[in-house]
Amino acid sequence: MSNENITPDQQGKLKVGIGAYFALFFAVVFFSGIFGPTSASTLWIDAQISALNLQHPDFPRWLTSWVKPLLSSIDFTTLNGAFGKVVTGVSQVDDALKTTNGTFRGTGGSGAMEGFLFAFGLIPSVMFALAMINVLEHYGALDAARKLLSVILRPLLGIPGVTGLAIIGSLQSTDVGASLTRALSDEEKITAKEKEVLTMFQFSGGAMITNFFSSGAVLFTLVLASGELAVPTTIGACIGVIFIMKVFGANLMRLYLAFFSDKNEQENNNDEVSEKTIKDNK
Image (cartoon, rainbow, N blue to C red; front, side, top):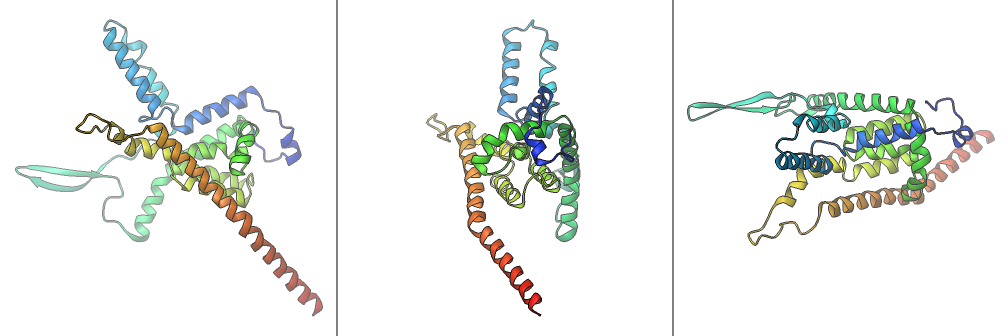
């Protein structure tokens, strides 16, 4: 259900049904990456299925073969997919030819043309994210997020609960977070200050879950010669530190806006009043 024709007073009395909460739950699962191809939950489920097949060789495989594909079908990154590879280079190794593959952007690009191709590659992600958020908004997911998450996000970050989906989406994809933030700003559901705080939260450690599990998590599998783990901590502790620093950065922006933004606005208002007074005197 869209809120374009709902006044602030009506929004406070807006009733949120069970369908809206279900849509919010689906949105959280879809944008959070909890069932992404490299997420801890997906890897755990895959390990349990493999262990089950080893322990019970006669167990029908078709009873478990559908689990992982089904879970992948409710993940944004999986459905968003990726561009195919093209040959970017050819070299000869002994008597064989070796090819190097890359994206459609190729190699060695620069300037405005490289920037155009980079922006062109973002179009599918942004369009898909905006399409999904419009569908979820129709079923009341944003209303449910506003009602549930405001009590958490207001004291924590100083932003309304309607930004919850943008925050969740930004943990998996910077494109999702940016497009949802832009949509909230264009629909005037957040103020300019709230947009800056939300942007700061996303900018610090962008796409935290995707980037960490695709590149940093492999470090936790390394073992020293003594048999001890090379990284003396846990994945959860690292994720927690990153998230805490994201919250810290957003609150630094809140502090800056509280001290300097209000002062600048007051000076601008004083300048406008002075200019108006001078014109009236003339």
